Amino acid sequence: MPIDISNRIRQLEKSAPKRVAARGTSPHELFQEIPEGGNGAIKGRDHASVSLLGHLKNVGMDFDLALSILHMWNERFCKPPLDPAELSEKASRLWIDFTGKEEAVSLQTENLLTFLDIPKMEEEAAKSASLGWVMEGGIPAGGLVYITAPPAFGKTWVVLDLLRACLTGTRWLGKYQVDKTPVMYLDEEMGVARVLPRIQKLQIPRNSDLLYTNRLSVKLDNKSHREQIIDAVRKYSIKIIVVDSLTRIHGLDEGSNRDMAKLYSYFREIMDAGATLVICHHDRKGGQGDSNVGHDRSRGAGEIMAAADMVYGVEKHDGVHRIVCTKSRLVAEEDAIQCDFVIEDSEDNNFVYVRAINHAEISNRTLDNCELSIVNFLRDVQFAKTADIKANVKFADAKVVAAINRLLENGEVLQETGDRNSKVFYLKPRELDDSLF
Image (cartoon, rainbow, N blue to C red; front, side):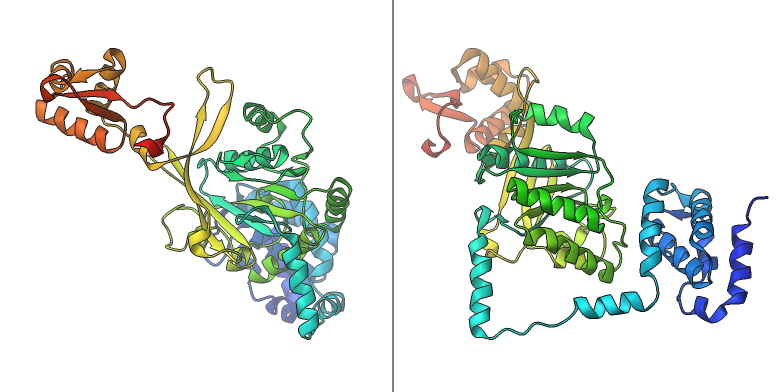
C-alpha cells in the first residue's frame, strides 16, 4: 500500500512536536508544487529537500524510510524533479551532519583561531606573493576566479579559450598572455560529445596536458573527490582547474551564506595544493542589467562572490561580447581586465576564433544597410568618387553622404584627393595597422 507522505509526517510530528518546531520551517509548507526557483517561503528545490530531510531525521525516522519518502516527495512536488542519484548522495551525506554533538565538535575544531605576530605576518605575506600569477594581473596562482553570465552568452567558449591559452602558453582572447600549464577540466554541464568538437575547433593539440572529467557527478564537498583532485594537482603540477559549473559541483544550499562559507573552505583545500579554481557560474534570472554591481547579478548567497579573488562577467550586445572584471582583490580597478571580443568561425567553418576587437572593428560590424551597400560597391570598384557612389547605391543622396562620413569616421573607408580636387574613396586595406590612421 503506497505511503501517504503528508499523513506520515503529521503522525511523526505528534510524536515529537518540540523537535520539529525547532527546525523553523513547517513541513506542511513543503507539500506544494516547488519550481526550480522556489515558491513563496520555500527558496528552491535544493533548500526544500534539505528541510524535509531535516524534519524526517528530527522526528526519529530511520534513513531508509526517510530516503523513500524524500524520493516520492521529489517526484510529486518538485517541478522538475531533482536528479534521483544526486538526491540520494546528498541525503546520505547530510543525514550525519544535521544534528548532534559531532557537528558541534567538528565546528569548534575547525574554527580554532591563529594569532600572528609581525614576523609571522611577513612570512604569510611572502608566501602569498610567491604564488604570483597564471595570467599577469588577471588570474592569480592558487586563487578563486568566477566567470559569470546569463545562458547562451558565450561563457563556455570563454573558459575553453582560457583552457587553450593555458595548455599552449599563448594569449587568452587573443590579447592576454597566459603561462603554459597543465589543466584539469571538471565538466558537469556539457559532456564530452559537446565539448570535444569545441576543443578541436579551437585547435587545442591532442597531446595537451589536459585532465578531463566527463559528467561524473564530481562534488567538491565530497572528501574523497577533493583528495583525488588534490593528488592529481600535485602529481601533474596542475595550476588551473576549470569548473563548469558551480551549481553542479556541490550538494549544499547556494542560498545559504553558511553553506557557501563551508564550500569555500573545501575550495581552499584545493587552492592550497597550488591550483587556481576558475568556476563558471550563472546570473540569476533576468541576467545582465539587474544590478549596477556586476557580480551582484550572480545567483545565490552573497558569500559566493565575497570569497572570490577575481570575478569576470560576460555580456553581449549586437553580436559583440564583452568581458569585464566586476570584482578584484588584487589589482586596481583601472588595471582590471575589460575588453570586447567576438566568437567567430573561419571561412571554411573548421575552426573557431575567440579574439579581442577594437572600437573601429565594432563599428564596422554594425553598419547599416546604406553603409553596407557603399562598402560592397567600393569592394567591387576599388576607387570611386562621391558622384559614382550616389549613382550606384540606391539610397537618397543625403543618406549616402551621411553614410560616407560615418564610414570615414570609423576608419572603414579612406579618402584621397583626385583630379580637380575631387574626393576619391576606397576601403581601408586590412593588412595595415590601425595606428597608422
